[in-house]
Image (cartoon, rainbow over all chains, first blue to last red; front, side, top):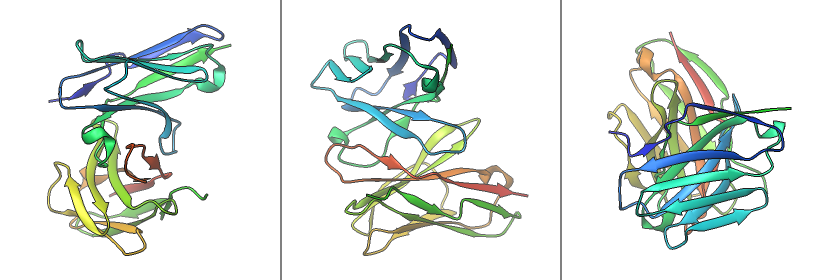
Length: 114
Length: 112
């Protein structure tokens, strides 16, 4: 049973517009969430994280929103750039992230068109 | 700081053989985790080592094992390779408290 779900396998967005990537989770014990970006043949690159005590975290063009009651989080990229084209993974873990066992969604492939 | 390094980057083995993959974490990081990425199953957690002890384990058969050395470097071993073990094996290290894991480039294993 998938504990972390990314229901959109792909997303296409025009350069300069907002990209919104969504993620749902089922395990209410998860209390730390992360987003990673991955290019083919490379390891995932950390983007941004959020603790369950917050509902929003921003870092430059990236903002993550957490809705605990809906068990839903989203990553907003504004403005989107062609270099953002990659696969984005949502990940979740317990114990405030102090232990290294991330549970990943299956990813959303983002294409940003010039 | 240098990032996480993994060796070898590519490996071809035949069924029944065994393989050992190596991971050097970011300097100062004591936690090392291993993941398997396949097209069908995505990124799946294998195990995590912290201070030379296995702290967490995913749902993989006993053919998959690992260890961590006193300098935090880690190895994972897969015995009696099966075709389904063909995957990208990723290692990640973290300094602990905030859970941010930094990944290496991975080892691409092909089992023939």
